[in-house]
Image 1 (tube, rainbow, N blue to C red):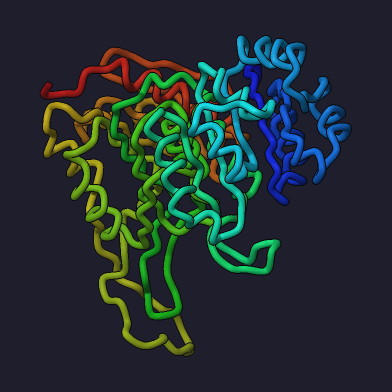
Image 2: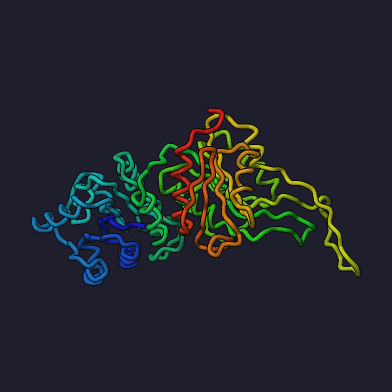
Length: 397
């Protein structure tokens, strides 16, 4: 994720300084080059040796000319500076343009994005002076990562906890992992299955896990898009920085997507929406009885067909086609019937390309032809889908 990226981590004198070891370790596992600068107060909480071992480089703790020269070399190659934890003192120094520590020096000399993660006592965080200093940093283009509320080391409760390391990694990845070639684009992605009620305790559904749709939403977010994810019931953690709309039924999906489609630059329908639902949903649990049990079904709204029939000339439409036979033929027919720009086709019969797998084998079908991908991770397949979709011109444009 962060291969060929360099992050300078500035560690300040908050009790959360001990978490910097985990942050540096996790960044290294993403193939990121990490360099560490510390304040003197941070060194009293955690020694520099563990951070030197985890980063594989000397940790700067002073402000001598040699120290400053080292930090300058780091900054020349840095993709981001992350102040985590950021103490009230360092925040104040940076706001005033002063650099009494290696951490503050790194921030003030950075030309790359700077992220500041405050961590302190709740009253110190809420203090007007601290809030004014943070607002000053925001006005200068620094990214302030909001602290988490909870029980603090000092015994108080409230804002001031450093976000979890995975959350900090999400903020860093959002900023530097990908080129922002989709910045300014609004993309709606549907994902997961739908559930169609039979009675209050039973429903019919399918095997979709939502993995492909969630991968598309995450990659679009990392590439700078404003993403809305309309999700059926899944067990996945939603991608960060994405507007998630939870739905249950095919009718819910239709209403959520159709009401938002006109505002999007692209709608990508990766959800496995039920084609049929019970015509008569019982208000009470159906009791077991002898003999067969029959259910009458009716059609659900066809969301993709509705989108194709109500095109606005600016929104790209992409559908998915999961087939068990005649994949290309059936999917090309779907492209024409639904009046969409692209169909991403795959086969349930092919190992590694069905529901619930970490990989997928997609064939993109458009009016111009077909692009057959190799078996890829769903993240890689998501990137290729976004690449090819945004090369197209929407129908009716």
